[in-house]
Image 1: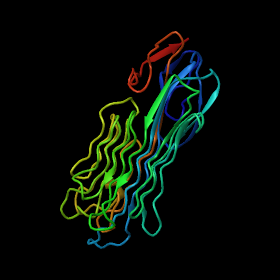
Image 2: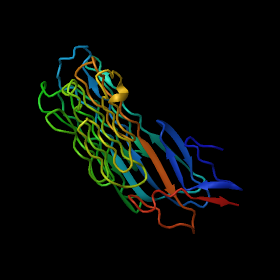
Image 3: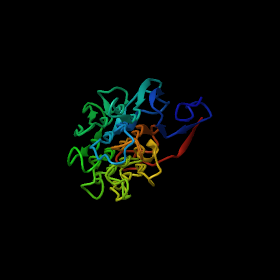
Image 4: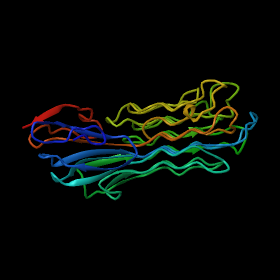
Length: 315
């Protein structure tokens, strides 16, 4: 039997993968394999969608905000029971939207329940408004250790004149995602604790006050280097996550050029639909790593053997 992440189920003469990776938005059921008593989990919420001003006039410089980055949460050694079912939800990325209709926020990612371990999605982009950071929930009654980081927000200089803000970076394993910035800054802010960098104003002279890039995402394989901003508006991914998008030229006019990076990066904003519309937020993710009793004993977030992909034959 193949699960939603393409993982082979455990059984006689089957192969046991030591991880389960869910990246497609939706709700799934994970059945705990035989011999597995503890699981470590990382959840990343979906990034919020960016807003754009729905007028094809190249002169506007309104502060249409990019979406916020999704939060990240991790927990080690959650006690589970072989044969029991556990819920897994992957939050969707928010959709870009016009000022007249609005963009949408990212969805929450979780394992078991929202009160045990969950990472909320980023706020939707809005006009001239500072976003609230996406947060995470960890129940201290579960797991041996736990942590995470809030999603990046935005920093607005003025309602007009400096253009839109970039998308926020996804949260890190021990710090917040970078803030999305407008043209008052040379780039978006760097993330911390392995989080994604914030998107910034386009580096092309014709679009610099009109389009901003997407925030960087955060990877699911443990804490690595934090993502930085970029002078062309790109929010770099943290911990191996994907970079946010930024307009490549004045001929670009799609949301893919300002979308958030995987996983959980917020989409960028745009003050006009002439060159580019707002960016979609990136989807979240949930990854489980686990061991068979009596075998490997050192799988734990944020960075101990978290990239393991070995297989064990069960007979």
